[in-house]
Image (cartoon, rainbow, N blue to C red; front, side):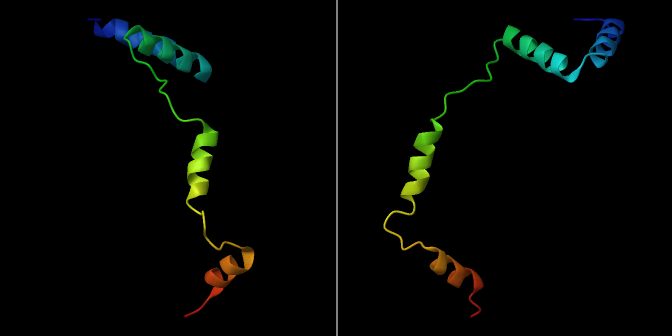
Length: 73
């Protein structure tokens, strides 16, 4: 473990770094302890296709949307 004086000195050195250098340092620190930020996600086209499927067989047009948006019942 580090002594408090070393931690204070390290903190003051980090304070002088630019934002991008801080992010880089943090990424290096996290990777050194085995942390991985990347995770597999579906491609955006797959997500779009799933979202588009929600409206399949629906009567969607601009007049229908306006009518529902502005109706006062």
